[in-house]
Amino acid sequence: MNNMKNSKFSFTKNFLYFLIAPALILLVGIILLSTVGFNLGTDFRGGVSFRVYANYENVIETSDDIKSYDLNDKNDFNEVVDKINYVLNSNGLKAVSIRKTTMNIAEYDVYNGQAVEVVYQNNGKALLEVRDQVIDEFGYVGKDEAVTTFDTIQSSYTFNYVVALVAAIVFGIITLMLYLGFRFDKSAFLVSIMQVALDIFLVLGALLITRVTINLTFAVTLLTTLLLTAVNLIYFYTTMKSAIKQGKFEKVKPVEMADTMTRECLMKKIVVLFALLAVFVLLAALVPGGVREVSLGIIIALIVTFYSSECIMPSLWATINSVKKKKKYGYQQKDVAK
Image (spheres, one colour):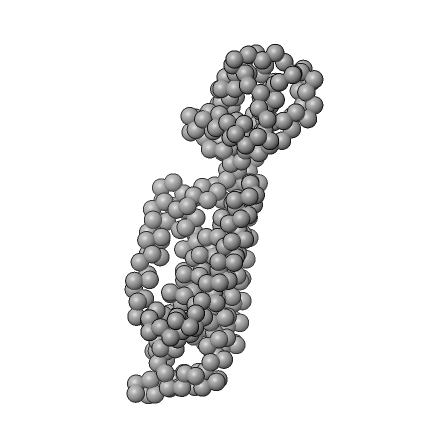
């Protein structure tokens, strides 16, 4: 930590190099947005759900074509998942979730038997055709009840949801601008709107590139991004104001002030970043379904906002404050010129 504080590395002088990664993310994001778009989940596009019974042992007569699976066994579960994914992928379909559940089949006197529940995004493929392929893949021909009917899931998010989300973000940006402007100085208005816009566009680009499924993830990720950006801005301005009051930056150029503050705070923010990443990586790895997608979105927001706050924001602040005729922070333009 002391090595970083005493380092002469300049974040502001390397600003153009730090812009390369954001520029690439935005460029690739624009290309993907204009071609394939976001990876919308069932909440936006709707989908299809069905269940497959797994335990045929001691229920009906088995043969070489039929295998009984114990879904508590990892290898058996993975084999079932592979069979289902094979059928879906061969039809250009993608599973949103595959999880263990139970299934009742009255014909075979099965009650609460092991099964897997599958939800996939529908591309218009005939449901009966896909179901027949699943039955054939598991060798359940003539025992069709072992695969339920394919039920259509209606999309739950509408245009009103998007409007409400945009309104919430705009309200958050305005509130942040007003807070920073009144507490610190007028230039904070401009810095905050530029920083929030950059972070949100970078996160959207990263979501497009990583193909994270967009359901509730979309709202949580964008609102998390706004919150993290606000925290980074407030922390930067508060720390800077405290240092100036202590006379630490008397007659110091804005670029030097920005570099010094960034170096001194970097290691603390890295520790916090890795602690938060560890939590959400574990959630993404251990908890399936929607929690995993939300965790991945938050991970993207954490990485993007950390990079932006350390490599972009100090240069924005220094540039805007360098062109001001008078500084609110206790020095004037003629002092900087010296």
